[in-house]
View 1 (cartoon, each protein chain N blue to C red):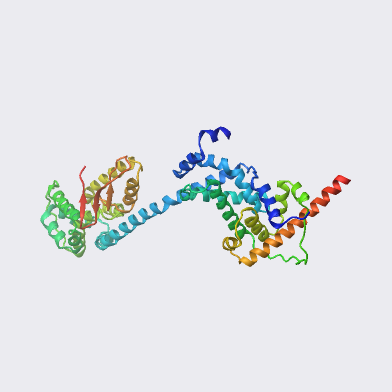
View 2 (view 1 turned 90 degrees about the vertical axis):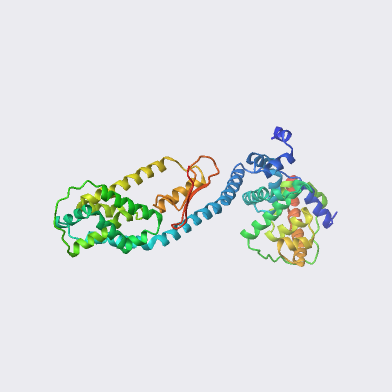
Length: 190
Length: 255
């Protein structure tokens, strides 16, 4: 892996991929696959689903590689394709299930120290446990940094729905972090 | 200490943004297969377009040539109807002995006249006449029986070899005649042997290019000596058209 990176720069590989060089495509895939799988995992419920998304995403990356003109980072361009493919996959395989959670009057609070102590894989797990719609909006807004207007366009929902789903997603996540923190404290004490 | 919403979001972004998870090995295989399929698809429409053009052209010429062929077949059928006995053979031998009469009938029968419009047919008629004349004949004064049967055979005989290069079911017609007319057998078997050797020669050349493919398809459909469309049999990629035969219009490049 490492020596390949030294042999060909990403730009070289992109140029070769544009000329339909299969070997270069594989090298490019190996260079970015693990980063892109992490993106897909945030939109999926498990690794199998994420790998399906990754597969669709890379097929599109190679089919559209001639559209990449070199403005902006290649990784960012790829990441956007992965996000779009993940949302498409989710739309195809999951019906938008409306989950009604009780609108609690108070804002759920979370201990900063408790949240920070959680590892990436724990955070990933609690995101994957969210209802699909919440998961999508939270990812797009909080991690990808899209605005509500952009999310409305990408996900095919209204801006209002995007906002309400984001706040519900946050509430659910905070509840989960709290319960995880309590469990940890209990384990230490016990 | 409670977290603000943006702090909360930042926590997820920072912790998950740089995450890497190795995918399982078969994912690349699926991607490679997916890319392979899309490439194959891009070639398919080109091939199907070429094939449909060939089929369309072949069908149209077949339709154009259909009328004369049918008439000839009717006359071949007439021969079949005549009873197979020695009486019918005798009048046939008289045809050979009197070449002038056969030529005349050939020109008067409607079937032969129609076929004579195409250049190939003309040549064939001539060859028949030649063969009739050069045939070593010992003139025995057998009485010419001018009954209805003889006239039928008279009308049928000159057109029979003409039908040969066009009608694919020639062997069927030829075999019925073989049993009845030993003289006609000579005339009909000679061209069959030629075409058989031609086919064998063609088959030795494999399909290496699109031109060869079209040649192979056309030869299946078009049984004439000069095909509807012919390409060079060279092994290089750029095959060019060497012959076109649309019945009335015929172009052939000599090698």
